[in-house]
Length: 131
Image (cartoon, rainbow, N blue to C red; front, side):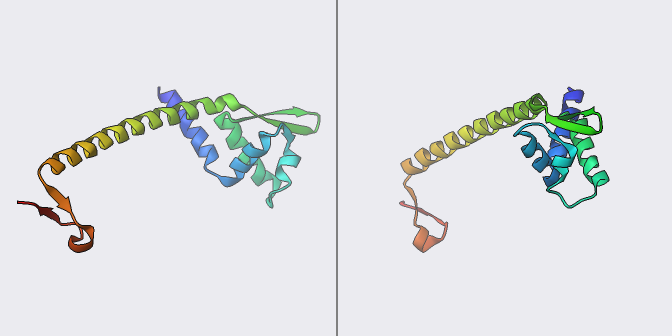
């Protein structure tokens, strides 16, 4: 479990930077050389390589050197952990919202039966009773 959370932290950390997100988006189109990836960015190659290193350490990108050219490709399976985490969070929040909605509906029914009404134009949030 701790290893999964560490990997998840690495993936989110890697994707937290706009340059690295742009690299990932470019690699969605297919593999590319370091030179091709670095071309749109106004930074020195050693600085750009730090971004590639972070992406490789997170498992999102892998690179292979052939002669003098290093080619990068996306590893989409590395996103599976993040996707699973998002699905879990979505389920938790949907369940919470469903419970909240049920609670609000219950409150509406109980206040309706007691003759409580709100007049937003005259009371500004004060509760009026029909006693």
